Image 1 (spheres, helix red, strand yellow):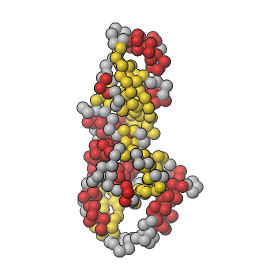
Image 2 (cartoon, one colour; image 1 turned 180 degrees about the vertical axis):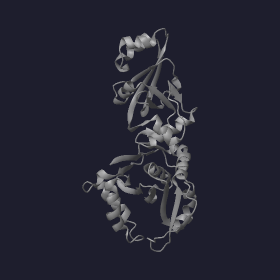
Image 3 (spheres, one colour; image 1 turned 90 degrees about the horizontal axis):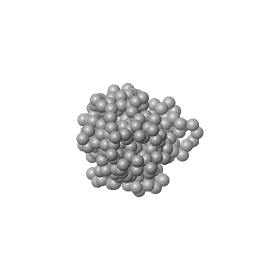
Image 4 (cartoon, rainbow, N blue to C red; image 1 turned 90 degrees about the vertical axis):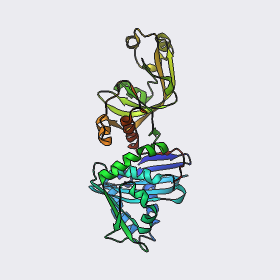
Length: 345
């Protein structure tokens, strides 16, 4: 199980996969109960969950999600990972609707099937398509046709499908909107700075051992900003982020006297770096958070279909849209949201 979203109204989402089927986990029980609330409309849903969903979770063919509002189950989702991928189930209780969680979950499920899927499909009641077809069309599902199997009572079941590359393109286009509303497991989707740090020093930053980064050039305007951390060779990866709490400009000797125990280098290394400089920048970092999974430059280039040049010092992401998208995608892959504020449709 992995934690997903945290909301200011105490909203949390967890991700369920193979590990949750080893025993009778509470999250698995909650997912089952949420899904079975649809039984009046889907008479065979209990059999489907107990036989197919559980089996799929055991092999990681399926991934499940449970969202909790004030510790009470409120959102359920299931996705099937294969070449003909399926968004099997998504239900958001009324109190959490109209804050774009549907878009967030479609993005998450799309990420889950990337690498497997050539096509994505799902079924839905005709009445839902009539009410929300604009939403589904925005992800590339242009039309709905009557499904070959009718699982529901009282309402025709329709089938939507789209090539995965179309769905993925739509997810990428929605990233700016999603970044304005969510952060991921404490990782911001909308960072404005990307800084390159030597791999061994980046590791020390993320462990909390190194709290001050020294630079010949930087700007005080980034004070208070979240910074994404790129570990240079041999890692060549996005590895986490931190908060820039202060940017201090001073003489090298004063910086050393004040921060020598937080820079994580020797006096000789410091002197070699600052030689001939009259002033340097001390970037004070707080709340360093490593990514659950680091993302190599090759991975994020592939995800975004953009050619990315490794940062030599730092990038202002306002001026580098390719890396801004890559940073957002890297954070999204950490599979955890925090909702900044409710935004009405």
